[in-house]
Structures are given as C-alpha cells and as structure tokens.
Amino acid sequence: MRIAISTGGGDAPGLNAVIRAATLSALERGWSVMGIKRGYAGLLGEDEVIPLTRESVRGIGHLGGTILRTTNRGNPFSFPVQQADGSWREIDRSDEILENARNLGIEALISIGGDGSLAIAQRLVDKGMRIVGVPKTIDNDVAGTVTTFGFDTAVATAIEAIDKLQTTAESHDRVLVLEVMGREAGFIALHSGVAGSADVVLIPEIAWKLEHVCEAVMERDRRGRKFAIVVVAEGAKDEGGHVSLIGDSLPGQAPRIGGVAHNLAKAIQAKTGKECRAMVLGHLQRGGMPTGYDRLLATRFGGAAAQAVADGKWGHMVALQTPHIVTVPIREAIREPRRVDPSHDIVQTARRTGISFGDR
Ligand code: F6P
Image (cartoon, rainbow, N blue to C red; front, side, top):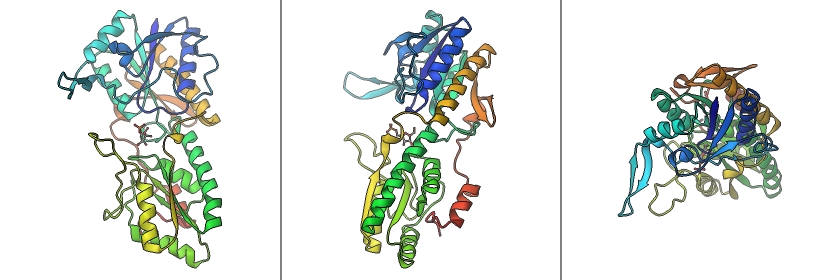
C-alpha cells in the first residue's frame, strides 16, 4: 500500500512528531509513504510530493514547524487563481486532487489539520478519497477530542510570558496587557491566565465591558496591589465596542483581528490613570519545540492514524478520549467547533480565586 501525509492550516508544535510516528508506523507495515508539500498544493502541481523514509523523519520528533510546510490558502474547492487583470478568482480544483493522487498510486491520505482542513478532508471523502484525519490546532477548538497537540506548548509559552510580565509590572506599578491567540476560542487565554495568576482574563466566549475591567484593576489598586496582569484573547469581544479589536491590515486586505492589546492598554490607561503597557505574543505561540505532553500526544496520534488507515476508517479522525486514543467521524467533529463553556470549573475556580472576566 502507498499512503500520503499532508499538513494544512496554521502550524502547531507537534506536527513533525505526527509525521514521524505515522511514517514509521506505515513503513513498519511494509507500506510506502509520500509527503505532500504545503497542504494540497503538492497534489495540484503547485509544490512537490516527496517520499518519506526513515531517513527523512529521523530526528524531527522534537522539532517545531512541519517538514512538509503548510498553508492556510490551499482549499482545493476554492483555490485562488490570479486573473490577467491582476484580480483573484476562486475555482474548484478538487477533481485534480483525486486524479493526481490516483496517478501517484496514493491509496490513502493522512490529513493533519484544524477544523478548516478537516472540513476539506470531509468533502474529499465525500468524493471518494480515502482519508484519515488528525486534529491539529494550538487553539484547542476542535470538538471530539479532549485536546489537540500544540495547545499545551502554546499555553506553556503564554505562561512563561505572564510570569515575566508579573515581575516587571510589579516593579513599575503598571498594568500589563498580554494578547494571546484565539480568534474564536479563549482556551489559551483561560488556561494560561489561570495558571499564570492573571488578574483579568478576557475571552471571546464571555462578553466584557471596559468599565468592569477598569474596576477590577482599581479594586486591586485599593487593596495595595498596584500592578495588574490582563490576558486577552485576540478575538475577545468588547461589549459596547469601546475597544477596537481590529489591528493593522495590509493595503487591499481585509482588516484582521489582532492588536486588541494596544487598544485595550490605551483605554485602561485613559480610564484609570494607571500606566499601561501592551504585549502581543503572536506567533511565538506557534513556534518552537513541542512540550513533552504535545510530543507524546502527537506521536500517539500519528501511530493511531496509521492504524486507522489499516482499519479502513475513512472519514474518521483520531482523537484523545482520555485515557485512550479513539477514532471519531470527522463529520461529527466539525459539526460544531469547541468553545470555552463559561460554566466550566476552570472559569468558576478562576472567579473564586479573584480573576475577573470583565463581565460583572
Ligand atoms: O491556528 C489558529 C490561530 O492560531 C488563531 O488563533 C490565529 O488567529 C491565527 O492562527 C493566526 O494565523 P496567521 O498565521 O494566519 O496569522
């Protein structure tokens, strides 16, 4: 049997560990393995398809990034093509994927990606392609699995940043606003904020008001704690719209989320008179070596994906349902993305230990 592996969407620490484990598990079964470069681009003639051997996956399990590269602009169902006049048009190139995979003798694909890549995988499965999914995202917002690899590493990076901001904030009696990733889901902000003992945590799932954030900061001030740490997810909505969530955008491109920290720091400073500083952690959260937890989870996912191929579990993705790795239908996993449940014990405990979510 010949299988292929692809990585799509934003990268996440642990991708290489999945590639390594899936490749070694496949080779051990006597299969051959191809790596499709840059999502599906390799199957569209826009990039390469390379053989994956023991040598090519040697020593990559602890490395960040992906040896197969990735892209979040590679949806074959709406592939962007530039026109003669310079404008862009999207065309459906999914049939080419199936045809090229057939021509290369690829009998099954392990597609490693987040909700977007998994939705593409499901559409290709519906067209007859034999695909097994592996859920990936630092945001932890894929349903059907207790967690995704990459999340633990992102949280560890955010906690390290909070720990460092705590000491400088205290020295200067300042409010430090840290923006972490999470366009739709606030898991990174919540987990890092609670573990790092932040004072305010703002997430997309709980609408917050500037006045409540400032009140939390000033209440602390009155108790003699002259500094504060505010952790804000990039997509956290400000009820009332006093703080713009829209950051810089390139000319001709849609304004993008990000930059909330700077706007929020300015707003808190104006309202409280306290000196504020902002920091956007950005892609540091996606880079670097995966934590031990993520390496192990990614390795288990890779091995389980090869097993799922052996079992013919097309249209399923591997998932952690503690303590086991199971397979679940991709269709079910992508039906509804996972979001922070405001009644979850982490939120409740956070509130009881003095963290404000800016909603009251
Ligand atoms: O992987 C998802 C994510 O981490 C989001 O939280 C964030 O908004 C996005 O990636 C950033 O993506 P890009 O690399 O395209 O800026």
